Structures are given as C-alpha cells and as structure tokens.
Length: 146
Image (cartoon, rainbow, N blue to C red):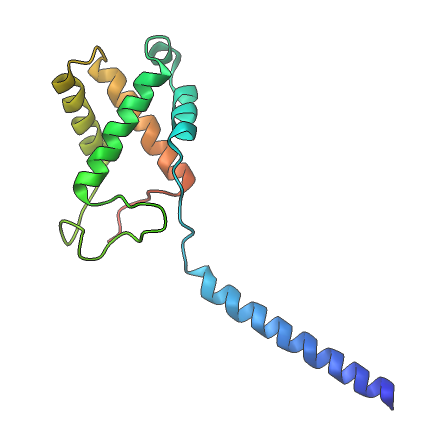
C-alpha cells in the first residue's frame, strides 16, 4: 500500500512540475531577450566582414568612428538606451520612429564630410551596411513593426 502512495505522490509532483514549466515557457515565448552591444566586438565583427576592397583602405579605428556615428544617429532618433533601460516611453521623439539603413548611411556620410574625414562616402556606406547587418545578427534591430 505504501508503494501506491509513493507512486501517486511521484506522479502528482511530476504533473505539477510539467505544468509549471509549460506555463512559464508559454509566458516567455513572447518576450524578446535584450541585445547587448559591445562596441569592441562590433568593430571586430564589422571590420572582419568588410569586402577586401574596403578593408584594404579603412582601419579598425575608421570602423569604430563610423559605428559611433550610427549610434549617435540612433540616439538622436530616441532609439538607444543605456544598459538595463527599456526602449520606448515618453522619451521617444515621435510616435513612430523608423530607423533604416539609408538614414543611417546618410547621417554617417554627413558626419564624415562635416568632420573632414578622409573616409570615402562609399566606404562609409559599406561600413554602415555591415554594422546594420551585425545589429540584426545580435537581435538589436529587426524589421519594421507595423
């Protein structure tokens, strides 16, 4: 008789555990894990992903500069946050903000021209495109939300 009580108790504990894990899994399924951008990692990844024609001309310092220009553009749009800070809320500049590659490249090229940088606008555009791809890969940006 004691073995029956042990078997029923074991089954009851297992059923509660399965239910709890299933419920939490369903709740977490809709959440998005925050992406953490480490600039040094981004510079390394973007620098390594550039086509030979560009990487032969630009340095990692140039890549770092362009990445910081793009991040400044995100900040101007209200689409950046410090670690642990949620995006959105009252501090977003507009109800609907769209950050696209063209806008990022335009801003970075304007910064290059304004600063008197020796970077070619085409190289800046290629770096921006590679950086946006990197941001997509780490989950920091995605497609437009409708």
